[in-house]
Length: 298
Image (cartoon, rainbow, N blue to C red; front, side, top):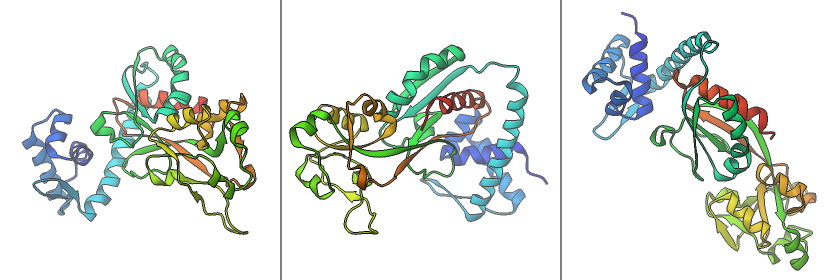
């Protein structure tokens, strides 16, 4: 007996939702109906796809392999349906977009008036979180993430990458002088991140020839948001290491000055949009991603 697409949908939804109960609510079905569909699928395949415990579900090795194939099949079906309807219908409905506050402020919010003019029937909800959010738990449709991606269950679209630079305000440099070497930084006030710790490793060459390990700094003040670090640097508090996407205008208008360029490593932070594929959301997601990718020059 062949597997049905309804059974594939149940299986994928159970895994994405984290439980049979949550999947039933999302699918508008009974818990018993979802449980029977999952059991029926395993009987057809003659293998266990999920290990059930009282606290959580865990994929078996066969389940992980089958999940990849099931997603591919459902995605292909959604894409085929969307390609037929996309030309007839204007995207509409609610679209929730999450990004760290610096990216939201500098790369998303300035363009939303133009986006709404193009797609007036899409209702945007913009949120900012400094840490990685669970899309399902937070009901987020698109999350823009800075740095290497970890979650392989999500669809992702690369938006580019942003170079890191060490910067200070003209006022700070006038008062404390400009450091000309990595060693000279020890005499200066450095601004760092509260977490994660790797953000306090600056892309600066140190030591002799051939050494290119990033420099671990000891910040005199820390903050959880890159935008807070930017404001501290602009106020003349100290020296910060920040990405071009949030400081490009500051450098062009001489509010911040790049320093230590002679020992700066070419380190770039990848920027990606991640999302779950959904037939009901596909049009809105695609419109937003195409729009923002054309305007975010990284």
